[in-house]
Length: 156
Image (cartoon, rainbow, N blue to C red; front, side, top):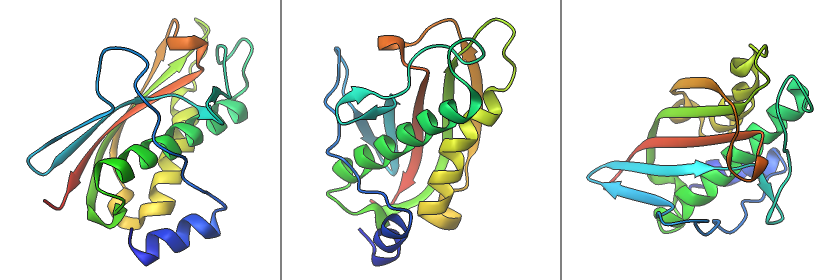
């Protein structure tokens, strides 16, 4: 991992966890050429879902943003595992796809996913600025409030 990225993580008070194992029949990441695809990450903290329920019903925007931040931390943990510990190999985060478990009338998914976007950009700097989708869902695995996947360009 580059010293600059490690320094930003420390300044933000973030320690990356061990990358979570898949919960079903899939792999946590795939590298194809110079692209790294990271499977959807849940708001896990200490091995448990930290933010569960539906935005606009049992979860407020601030809690949803915290869930999105945890998803982003877990994305970085998967990237670190995929890249042999070297987050400095990330050239650019191309896209984040954010899924928000939402009550039918909740329309602030974009604000929730800002939690992940802000964290990724804060840790990776210019390389962390990305395209994005933020969509509402009826339900997510394990009653998670948020799930986010990522596509990154990497140095081969």
